[in-house]
Length: 147
Ligand code: RTP
Ligand code: MG
Image (cartoon, rainbow, N blue to C red; front, side, top):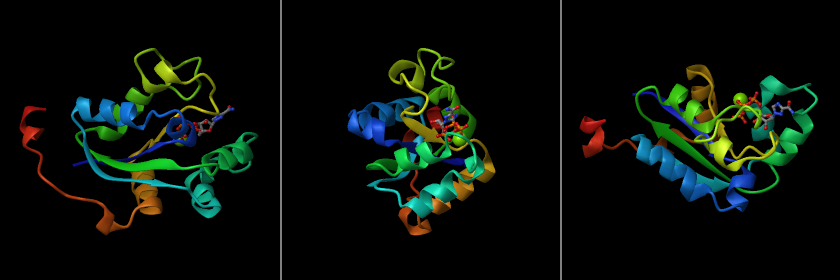
């Protein structure tokens, strides 16, 4: 079963949107298998956003993501990587459609509420950056057969 790394960013935590965001993925039919509120270290943030090092927004991005608690999660389900990216909405808030998390709640691209892995390789790398294997729960969900 596919897994992805999702994270409510500091703006989402401050705005009280953890519950709303978790609810959307639960209602979709995905399974939460790990989650924790944490403040990311500079090293963890630099590793997480390594692909953006050198870009004009990189310093602001690392400052923002380390500025306060985030809610880090691992979610599981069929095609969860691609489907969760659809549910998040586009990066640029002007392109994020209503009905998506960013489209419904975010105004600025730099404060767009949620991160989601963009490929299976990113998902594995990001999950390992935030969670130890023993922090990820494996359990059968009775509802799975209906989704
Ligand atoms: P994320 O990694 O945070 O889930 O977002 P994403 O895949 O949708 O977007 P990505 O291209 O990976 O960019 C990471 C974050 O950097 C900020 N950004 N600002 N000013 C800009 O042009 C710009 N481009 C990207 C966004 O906050 C984005 O979420
Ligand atoms: Mg990204």
